[in-house]
Amino acid sequence: MTSTNDVGLASERIQNATEVDLNEVTCSIICENILWKPLSCQQCETHFCSMCIRQWLDKHPNQCPMRCTSFIERPCSKFIARQLAKLKVVCIYRSYGCQEVIPYEALEKHEITCGNQLVKCIRCQLDVPRKNLAQHQPVCQQTMVMCLDRNMVHVTCQNDSKEP
Image 1 (cartoon, helix red, strand yellow):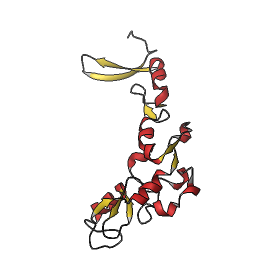
Image 2: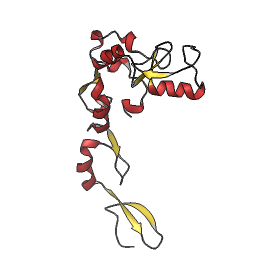
Image 3: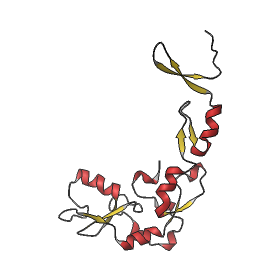
Image 4: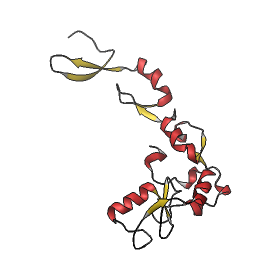
């Protein structure tokens, strides 16, 4: 789970909300969150999160949510880009221990590599913070064993007896 799923950012994650008028940078018509990877309609100049407008257009081909005659995509305005660049955002993995507050423009890169992001151990399927995975794997109590006669993978405890 990251911000990078391309839907808007929850306004509660904005650390410096008083420095920017959040109404100006909100995808108000679709997701009602802070714009993420914004695009705009060439005709009405309304801004949308890229994923929000893509999902909308899948259901309503070539129709702008603002009821323009057609939706023609254009990049977001420089004003909106500057406003978004001012935002400081709390990492999505705060509840897992990350205390980082990241500039909007660096958020995606941080959240992809955040050490507090939960990843699955391939042996035991336990969710472990990325930063702890290297320490977890050597002590993981489960290991995968290949059965040569049946060509199957079997998960077993390291403590299981090797004798029948």
